[in-house]
Image: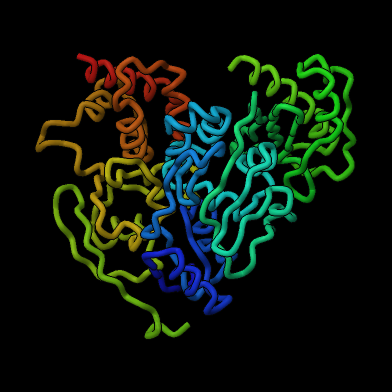
Amino acid sequence: MYSFNYLKPVSIEDAADLLSESDEHKVISGGMTLIPTLKQRLARVEHLIGLEKCGLNEIKLDGELLKIGAMTTHAEVSESDIVVMENPAIAELASHIGDRQVRNRGTIGGSLANNDPSACYPAAILGLGGIIHTTKRDIKAEEFFVDLFETALEEDEIITAVSLPKPDAAAYEKFPNPASRYAMVGVFVAKFNSEIRVAVTGAGEEGVFRCSEIETALLKAFSSESLSDITISADGLMSDIHAEADYRAHLIVEMAKRAVTKSARR
Amino acid sequence: MILGEIDVTQVTLMVNGTLHKENVFDYMLLADFIREKLKLTGTHVGCDTSQCGACVIHIDGISVKSCTMLAVQADGCNITTIEGLADGDVLHPMQQAFHENHGLQCGFCTPGMIMSAIELIDGKPDISEAEIRQGLEGNLCRCTGYQNIVKSVQEAAKVERS
């Protein structure tokens, strides 16, 4: 690890001010990606700005929306009574990220800011049509996820919370890589009054995306049988040593079917 | 970067019931702090990439991988390592269960296994085998094939129940 200084601002406003002072500064949340990256010297920072004293870990109902603070850990989300009652698909998704120790440190804000193409949360936030609140503005999920590890966040902008609408039914199903446990393909399916939203992680060359073929099929009938004749093009999907693009295309449909079935059981 | 420019921060931590005040470089990993500053070498560093779980400790009662956290981040916290479990010669029930069920071979992963397992069974005396296997997914053992580790944790859960 290269050397750096660690700062602990006591408010998110102070953290944003510190962040804006230099592009050599970086915010750290749970550090489950950033610390390994620093250890491998894949990143170098002058100052790390820890958000642990800034609060931001409240879970509450904000009107119709479930609002989760950016510093809320995956373990806290998965065990929160409010999340389990209002949006159980999110609680279940959070309970399968990484392992227990990662869930005890990793946060929803950190996961979204990192926008790993195989992370689970981006599928849920895009699948539900959530809103990402930052120190500067509110960003719609559609506009937030830009490319691999790239978001709409500006250099000195920090996520403070995320708001999620309540679906009529929703579920997430992933096919984890057997070694890393990251999603080789993960599909979040959400049914609203007049809309079906399906978001796919782990597969797209540009990160998380919505799958219109599956959405259209499910709009006719929200059942896994609606997907039995669907095939997804492998164009734009990732190929690596773990899975070829056409296998990922197959997994997208399969995971979507399982997610639909799971959502009906709730 | 010149060494003189780097902050040294004083951290105050309670480790296994003893208060420690130490100066650390901000980039020092918590696992290194525990092993090299405090000489508590029961916490192991296996993979150093947050996968194997040999470095698991408890911070304010919650299990974390100490190779993926900085010492400055633990300032003000209450830490328990494997050395803090036994009461003199009396082993912690989880340690006793590993001892009686031969829940280890080389022993390298054992401190992390035990720290993770204690959090895992807390409040879950009726935990199933499947839940134990799932719950220990962040701890790797290259010797045992996990059979006796799972058995040990089940036995410890039974002790908790009684």
